[in-house]
Length: 275
Ligand SMILES: C[S@@+](CC[C@H](N)C(=O)[O-])C[C@H]1O[C@@H](n2cnc3c(N)ncnc32)[C@H](O)[C@@H]1O
Image 1 (cartoon, rainbow, N blue to C red):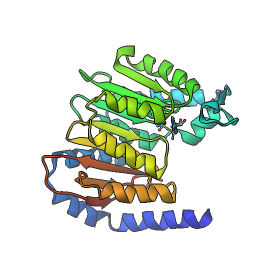
Image 2 (cartoon, protein in one colour):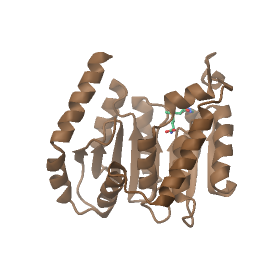
Image 3 (cartoon, rainbow, N blue to C red):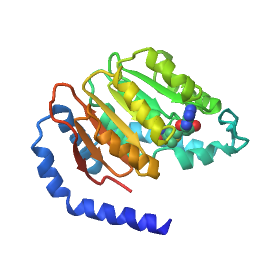
């Protein structure tokens, strides 16, 4: 555990040292979506948000604070487990931290008409940030997938506070069943956040299946790319996928750009955003 932390900090220190060099390198590539992703990164890094954005963040963080006091028991029965946890415990452990949610918010602002897929709703923290960003964009849509029924109910209630019911869908059920069903609907997503079932094979399978239905260009964000050996291996394979043009490794999160108009492939960058 301690060794893992030391390794992480050493790696982040190395990224800080080579940051200027990475910036020079990325500037050589003229892909418009890559430039927008970089802009989103700096928006978060330098806190370049409008007062309206900051108010939206406050609303999301008030929701988080409310959940942190919620001792309702959540059952994991659908996963075949007799384990339980409180909402507060789940929120503390699994919900994305504010900086990473701000990054999602900034990325969700990139498409003119965002059609967003989230795999891993959890208590709806990341989803709240995404919806706050896209709520006023005409034709925007948000689909989020979660196995635990109680969390689906909780997050749906929260999402309804942000947008009308028609603008979002929380798909309840285990991904083994719900993912193929969702793919068969052929929704042309253009922003995807893969943050559920952090295992190598399912993660790779999600990418292969989603590539068949997304619109191009698209941005896909993979969470927890360094969480386990399996996820590290998955991220290596994702970066090298024949349809991935650019990848940005932020240690906790990996972002890939798929753009059929650009012939460059598998160009990778490594930055540091937050711990
Ligand atoms: C890390 S949490 C998502 C966090 C959320 N995106 C956020 O940033 O606030 C992952 C969620 O995926 C759900 N999940 C994991 N594996 C699943 C599976 N095979 N089927 C359905 N849901 C699953 C878990 O119940 C959990 O709520």
